[in-house]
Image (cartoon, rainbow, N blue to C red; front, top):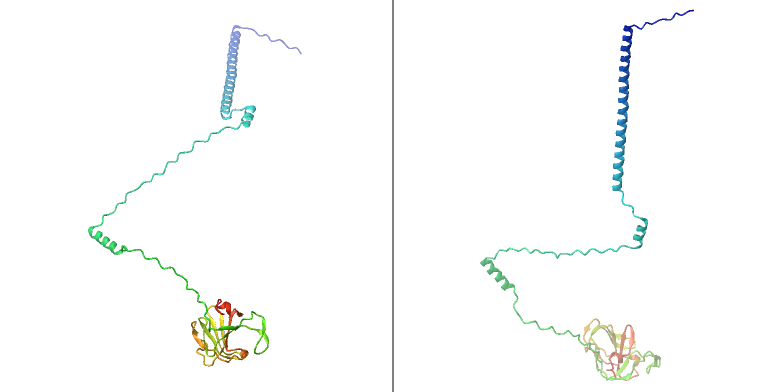
Length: 283
């Protein structure tokens, strides 16, 4: 197979068209180059601006952080401050001002003349008259305790036995003698030793006519061997010295003795010595 070469003839018209195409291609190429150059420069400009903004932001943040964080104190300074306590001076005490008292005047209405006279009259009636001070009240003294009086005036012929056994002159029996025998003549008056109440007035076996009395202090007295015809009866409240009756011969338990009054005293249900009851007055 034979290929024939093609001859291209370079005519003026064809050269002119080629130049025009070449220039057009150059113009298009320059435009593309210009656009590419412009696009590259814009990218780098934007990149530079971004870097600058980031750097400015970092610098601002660092400067603010330095202001907020407290200054760093060296460790040696902290140890020194811990070892040496700080000397503090107490603040001066606040001066307390004295309270101010405000006194407000009280306004009153002056009394009318009539009211003043009425007030004066009231004062005259209510003001106590000047009198001498009352005399001191006399000192209250307790009345002396009256001592018992002897029921009869005579001689003791048989005393109180103090609880010991003695032989009775009448019966011959050994027994205690719970009272005293006071020798007197027949018919001698017998009186109450002290104030009291007659609890018994009558006859008892062996002791004859008997009067028993209860006194305010609880003491009991017995008068034995009286005559018939007593002057008191049971229940009578009589003062000391009241005549109860007279000595008789009714005391059969002691009939072997001479005429006498058998007298007994009891306190707290126990017999006591009549000599002590009369405080030594009995002989």
